[in-house]
Length: 44
Image 1 (cartoon, rainbow, N blue to C red):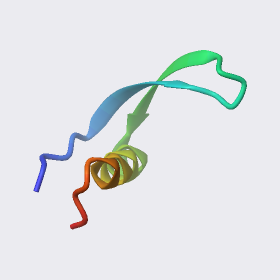
Image 2: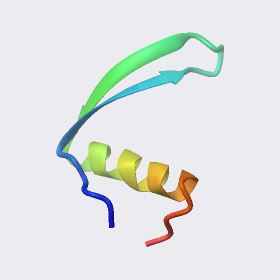
Image 3: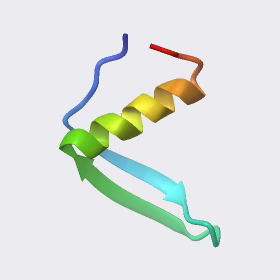
Image 4: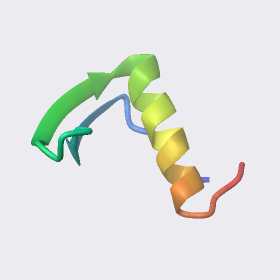
């Protein structure tokens, strides 16, 4: 299983295609990493 970081910074586009960059910590950071794992085909 991939290492989960306590703090992450994510670059993304909002629904209007505006580029954004945001920092996330704690539980929210873990949830984002978990969902990104699914995009990579990791199901555990």
